[in-house]
Image (cartoon, rainbow, N blue to C red; front, side, top):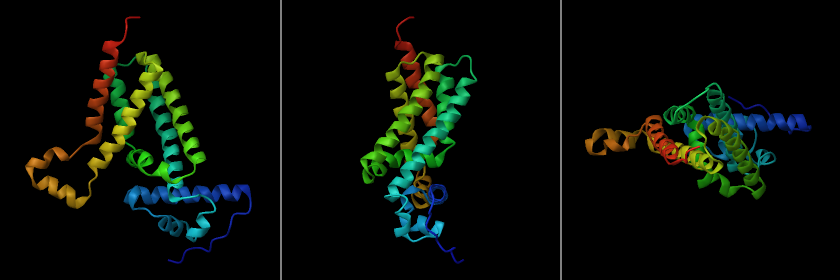
Length: 221
């Protein structure tokens, strides 16, 4: 199929629309292939423009995916907070269950969480990294308000929990999606069965242990 002819955006609105189309294309490709296998040329072709034209809107491939990671943080935070806000009370196990369920329900976000510190942040400008980090801090602060209300977590405990939850979600997703050849190897040898990981149950167990330990060591109010 012939791609439509690319026309350079002339207005702020047109530029914003073009950036949105690029992000949508990258998201669709990432969901289908995994982030590591999507190139800048792939994204440009999906939108219908040359790679050099795409670089007028984003400085690198990594900036595109870092912006999608920031969007993922906002979306996940909103869903998590909506669930927590509806609860008058919650146990550490219940909070851990919500964290694990909302993260594992977003596989591309988990993929992005793993890729962000490994390579996305390393091939963009400092301004782009700063903007991304500020988004994550803002969302963690909003999540922290609910965690403080339900479990009495301190700011540092919230930061530790957020880092543990998102870091493990990213790592576990990578382990859980090794590709068909490696997965077949794991399934063929009972000694390698431990390498087949289900993200949500393991994440839930780890976060339950963390939150239970935090509550057990908290000073009496």
